[in-house]
Length: 149
Image (cartoon, rainbow, N blue to C red; front, side, top):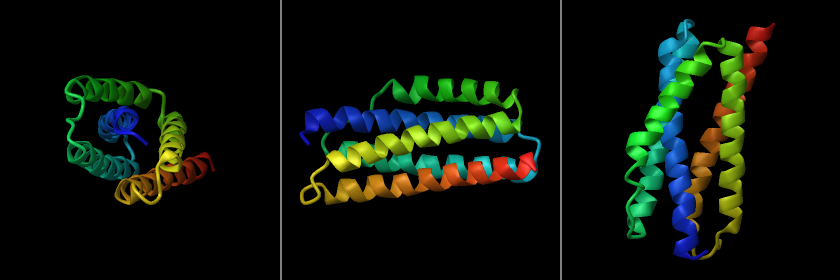
């Protein structure tokens, strides 16, 4: 994949991960259940690592992460996180599953479009992020099943 096509895709993930950090942080602060709150906080921390991963890739390719992303995207994530939290834990978990599924779909599409011989490092980083997103979705789904019982 050429850099002119790769960089916008990496910028998309950079924005997505920024959004998720503030989304899950806001949910952590609003959640009354201590365990679920701590899980949201931990997941936000992991998403922060994804920002570093994607940002490092962008910089290594000679570009800069989108400058407005650090301002606008966190605000959106924070507002969305607070708003979703008002709907109750089950609704929050359902929304989070959808967000993680979208991230996983996009990660898979990008990974499959890359050259396995020339883009090994990029693929490995993206796959590591994908695994985390998959684990987050599974945790959310498991917790949703638990609270419904």
